[in-house]
Amino acid sequence: MTQTITTILATLTLIAHVALILGLVFWIINNKKKLNFLKPVLEQIRKHGMIILLIIPAGAIAGSLFYEIYANFEACLLCYWQRIFIYPQAILVLTAIFYETKDIIKYLIPLSVLGALTSILHYAEQIQARLAPNSDPFVKCTLGEINCADSYIFQYGYITIPLMTLTAFLMIIIVTRIMQSKHGIKDGTRQLLG
Image 1 (cartoon, helix red, strand yellow):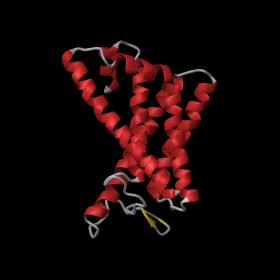
Image 2 (cartoon, rainbow, N blue to C red):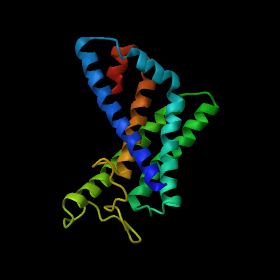
Image 3 (cartoon, one colour):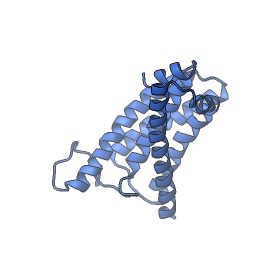
């Protein structure tokens, strides 16, 4: 069962990476050619954004608990830091949905940025351990006997648990920025990246 869940989560991560790359390409084309073909997609994200923002951290929470409780993968120090940044997001979004407000989304970006930075560091530790196993780690990261450089999974030649988490954080940032843009496609995509 662990392999099946890992394959599903890794495939969802791969699909998200393809979507991120295509979104970036379309965004660049849209801005260069002054087209409006992204407008329907952005409108759908704005319309259903709160549900999307609930599904992403809820999926990350379910995945992390599955790996820890069912698969018996012990979490390292950086794993716990990533959880600190993603777990509250599900509660914040669920609360916002309950109170029918979108004001809460501005609090998701700082949590996601800090979580993404932690995920990048964790992923870099794992990749460095694969490419140069005898080199010194970036950070001395251990929790008990668990080392942050250890990776339980390595799907499609690059996907690990921290990369899955990084993808979730990036998706949250992008959806949040899209929801914050209230203007048309030109202003909205300009706001998306700052």
